Image 1 (cartoon, one colour):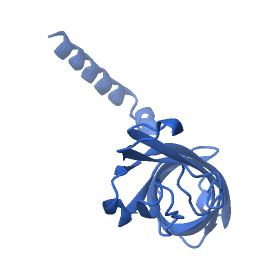
Image 2 (cartoon, helix red, strand yellow):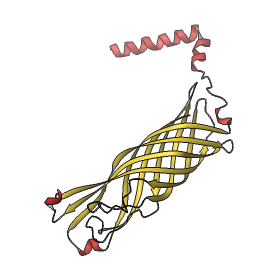
Image 3 (cartoon, one colour):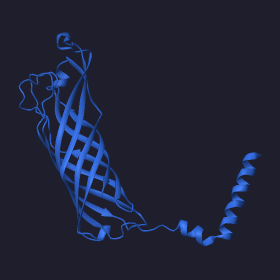
Image 4 (cartoon, helix red, strand yellow):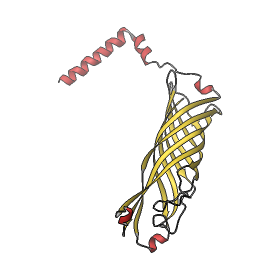
Length: 245
């Protein structure tokens, strides 16, 4: 009963306000256009900060079925961060070309092994986790398609290719016997969707993006039990980021 009475009071109060001062009410509902000339600039720049969830898509080597030292191999998702500098070039009313000349991606992917004969001297257990850390310098080139601006909101989609160099890759490391050796160079494609929110002094752009690596980054070593059971390894990444322009 009190709930119904409270709703009735609020309803009457709104009607009175709308009757006495309709101009003020509609003025509050009307949105002021922020940064009206922002999208007309030939170039604009931004700082991008993001969080990623990454893992490896992989294929078993035929040796996996021939030996029983490793019973199960699974790729484990992990969380990392991105830090980048955005450069955007206007191509038209709805299209832009953009890249990130400085784009650092920190990841920590992992493989989980179920071992039949764990080596206790090497601190192995029946379920052993092998982490693969990455510090990657990425150079993406993307085409962005934007909708018309609705007051202070715009929706966009993007797609493009990328080239990556992993400083932490250990292909040539002779002391990586208990790890998985990876190549330093990777390339692939990425696509995503985002939103531009226009504020009086800046534009905030949340973005969700998927990345697929095409290159086999695995440097297989037939003498290593953590490497010889795997054939191809390809990177997969889901990134949520915020860009301030």
